[in-house]
Amino acid sequence: MSVYKSLTTSDVVVTPFKVNKSFSFKGNIFTSSNVGIDRFIGKNIPYISGSDLTGKIVSQSQALVYQSAKQLYYSNFVNGRNSSPANLPQFNSDGTITVQGNSGSYQPMYENYLDNTLAANRLFPTASNDEIGVISIPSNLFGEYIKPGTFKYEYNGTVSTGQASSRIVSGSITDDGDGGLFESGEKIGDIVYQHGMVIITSAGSSITGSQYGPNSSFNLGYGIARYSEKNTKDLNFYMSSSGVTCSFQSTMTIYESQYKCTFNPNEFTYTQNPSSISGSANTGIPYDFVTGSYFEPYITTVGLYNGANQLVAVGKLSQPLQSSNITDTTILVNLDL
Image 1 (cartoon, rainbow, N blue to C red):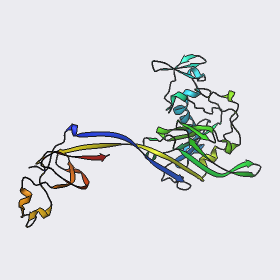
Image 2 (cartoon, rainbow, N blue to C red):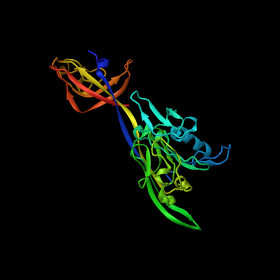
Image 3 (tube, rainbow, N blue to C red):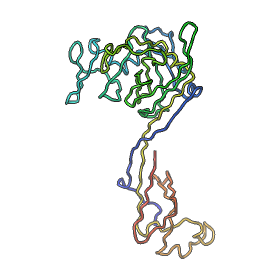
Image 4 (tube, rainbow, N blue to C red):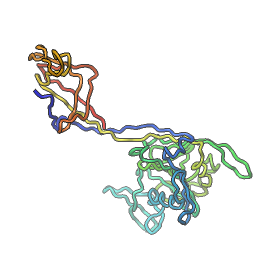
């Protein structure tokens, strides 16, 4: 009689599923280096080592922040082949994407980490000294990706309006679930969920008091990446204000292993309960009823062992289960990793 029984591959089922965790950081907690969320200003200026630095936790060059965001997330939208403006894509039956540009047809050259290719819409300021804002959320917080539709950036504070005057502003930036950032119904940037990158390409109307230029001045698809007449000077408010609350949900994959532990009649008809021993635990003799062929002990615990018979996991039943000498007994053990 053995206290061990081997499991076969058919006894183990591994099922992946997504789980989410909510985070909300406010005020001083949000700006703490222990949290690790950093904010940067990117600027379209020449790179000079050691100058024009940005960042609340780690210092980075404004020029490099701007160029990195442009190359990683907007390269297909800003310029096409031979620096021609990109234009609306054509999705072909063979799975390729053809884009009609000024110099003819070509395919987008870069992976820009789009969350929705059916409504590709990214705009980027490209004039000299144009600025962007970047909020970088570390992967130890967002996991595999930020859950779409859960990002929210609330702010309140004072903005200078010139002539030694100022006004109090408040509002919130949210994502639309497809990678777009919106404030009061106006698109002001993009979010890359799998990288934890929040990119503000134009300050909202509540900050600057102005709207985008005429619709004819920019393309809403793959296309011209200039925000006409849009003032971005107050991006510093988004990137430096301490009166903010940043909230989102992280996403992780958990693998649940289910072990089917089946024992036949007359298997595991043994108990380690000390009350079944007459005398001391080391030298005592089991009572007669314990050794009878009809003994049906109650099961309270299932242990999972490795090949060296080392205990690696323990499962406790919610209530004792009586074994049977007539039918098979199956216990399912779920283990989340």
